[in-house]
Length: 216
Image (cartoon, rainbow, N blue to C red; front, side, top):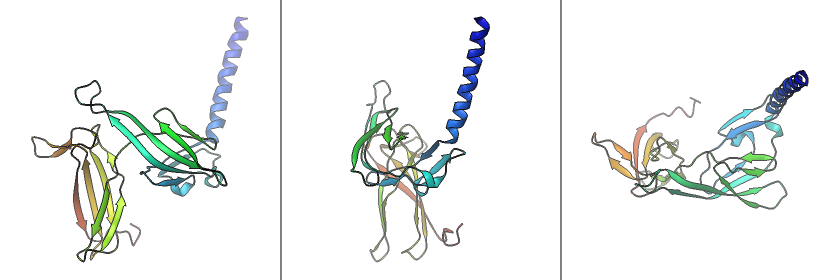
């Protein structure tokens, strides 16, 4: 009985390794940053990053679309345990398969949304300031909600804006967004709380050739 149990255990272990290896070859993971109101189609071109298994082709992805209708987040008040951290955040989604009716759904941390056999997870949250740029004649040359990536737990966030047309020179802007701006003793700006209590956006503007036209 002892030797039989030992053989069964090792055979099961080999079976698990084979199953993981074969299963990994037919699965994929991908990431995409979505701003409220934006839609996403499950195609290779719509992913920010995509890691396919050995037997996965971009042409065989299950077709469906998702729209981020609304994103709710609240932060733990200062002075309480975990103060400043996101207490809860949830993405309200609308999903649709080809020829199907739109379906409402929610994604929370560790509570993925099942869509056409795929599992969609919520990895984090952030801000997307809406920026409008006009030229000297007052004509709008840029208007968009730009996703800024958090750099710390208080949501100090970094973003980049490129303006290729409509100005005498192309513009590149590097921005920092502070949801609750404060000034350090050194004079540098920082955010002291993740919620929008005193939001400030700073921009460093570069004018010149961004290298877009020649593919750099």
